[in-house]
Structures are given as structure tokens and as C-alpha cells.
Image (tube, rainbow, N blue to C red; front, side, top):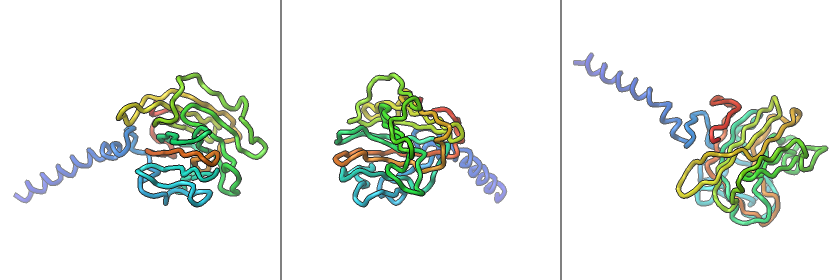
Length: 231
């Protein structure tokens, strides 16, 4: 009887462990168990802001309060080669939403001396010392239908520090959809640019209220390195 009981118990444990990867993958909508959530929907303890009062956790999103120019970077991990997925929309503002990659927190300069991507349509800027310009031929904007920045959009950035290549795909989220199939909107290439640095959200100037949710990062990239999950 005891042997039968422990046999059933062991079988149950094996069965449960067999489903563990599926449960982990189900924690995000992309089926990638290696993605790490960057925001719990409640507070910004995982993030560091350039100025107090610039951002808040509001209604399950990271909300830009529109008070001043500045940034908010993820302080739990800095990355060189990475996958970064998030949803974004603009509530109010006169400049497109902006995010920063391959910057530095030592020293801290304007915009973290980073490479700027403008989701969801692919504008850009290069804030590195000696640059501080649009980047010219280092960026390539790809033709795509214009995505309404006032509505939620999904974006995915992948970056390879060794090659200095970073790419972004985005798409509009319609209705109650939690994912969508992206289209590539922007590509950056400069082998001297890749570095380990923070992933950051940027407010370009005062008066802008951008919102972010569903933020995930994977670094090192285990699932489909060099490929998009959302394309």
C-alpha cells in the first residue's frame, strides 16, 4: 500500500515538473521563459530616475508625469546583448516617445550618452560624446505603415554589443489583443557603440506624458539569439 502511495506521489511530482517550463513561459505573452519582468505594476523600486517626480507607477503602468526632461533606467541589470520588449503610448506631448540603449551611468551625462530609439515609428538620435546628432547613415529607418503613438503599441528591440547592431520592430495593439506581429522600423549599426549599459525610458522635454507597460528583458539572450520573437 505504501509503495503504491509513494509511486503515485512520485508520478505526480514528475508530471508537475514536466509542466514547469510551460508555466514559466506563460508568465509573459511571448512564450519565452527567459524574459524577465522589469515592472511589477505597483512601484518603481527597480528603476532609477534622473529627477524626483518625473515618473510614477499609475494604474499598472509607468507614467511620465510631464514635469521635466530626464530619464528612468532599469537598475536591476545592465546589458550589452539583449532583447527588450515593451508596450508604449503617448498620453500627451509634442515629441515622440524615446528609449535609450548602450548608455552609461559612470559618468552620467545628458540622456546617459546613449543611443536613442523612438518607438513605435523609428525616429532616432545619437547622444554619445562627439556625436549628439541624428546619427546619419548609422541609422536606417524602414518603410512601414505609420503607427498611432496615442494608442498602445508593442515594440521589441534586440541589440548585439559585439557587432554594434540594434534593431526595433513595432506594431499597433488593437482591441483587447496583448500581442501583435511587428514590422521592423529602425536599424542602427556602429561597432564602436555596443557596450554594457542601462535600458532607459526618456522624457525628451517637459509636457510629455508617455506610458509604458509589459516591460521584459532577456540578457544573455537564450531564446532565438539575433532573432525577433514578435516579428
